[in-house]
Length: 339
Image 1 (spheres, rainbow, N blue to C red):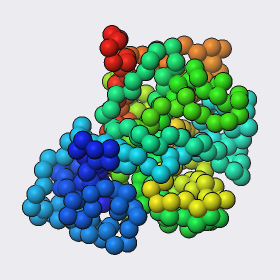
Image 2: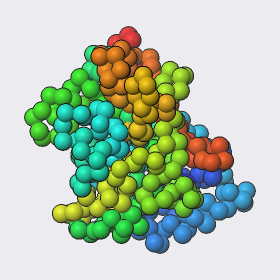
Image 3: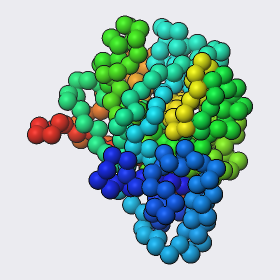
Image 4: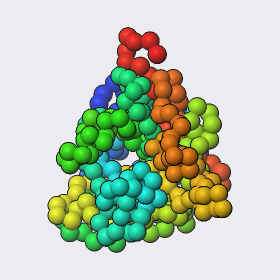
């Protein structure tokens, strides 16, 4: 099934069920008001939501209305935790070549995770407010999953079974700030503003055969100012699948239902040619593009995002239809300041 959270003036919004084609929606208030309620009591509430989802898809839901992604908050507007990762070895090779992170490319035993801010997660059409264009504003198109309760020491196969929902995410980074934070060795804070999520979150069964052992074998589309810049296969080069990421997260502590784990920028290996290395599938963050340019030309030539720039992130199924809806964001100057 597909679930979303509509704006209602509160911090947590109102849970809605969305049809498979993203055309219709229905408030779930007769079952649950908030998505976190469902995650806390999944075995009892999710079958009721599934019945409403089936009625919506068959045209028998009595109070359905047209679905509008512009009315969506993040599926979980605030979560118990949001954890980012570097699950793609090619991304680590390009963006972190001189650090231990580059070991991800070789399938190092331990995934790389960081604890992000989860108290105010952004909706799919929320603006990216940035105080200065000199902060190196970068998009980072990725996948994310929402977990059930997982015990400390949970193995990867069991953690995989505990994935309740799958989403898209744009984990915005301020690249001018991150090197200093990383050098201090105590995590990312100022360089990681609010992460945005797709209009809908979907249960893994909706993904069919494309969902394979914690990897999603579909193409992630990234569009910058109307120009397609990334068409990367989300499954092909994922070094650490989601089951392994979750298992690492709960290695020494339990994980509560509603925890979100992101994959990091979806990335594919380049193709070696006579002229060097080419990345025909593009990129899902500007830092990768700049790294490619440095390898090929000795220095980067692509700037980071500017005020007025737009980013669109979407994934389509094998039938060509959007699965999660699109993240569509614009970079804006602070309120009261002209861009």
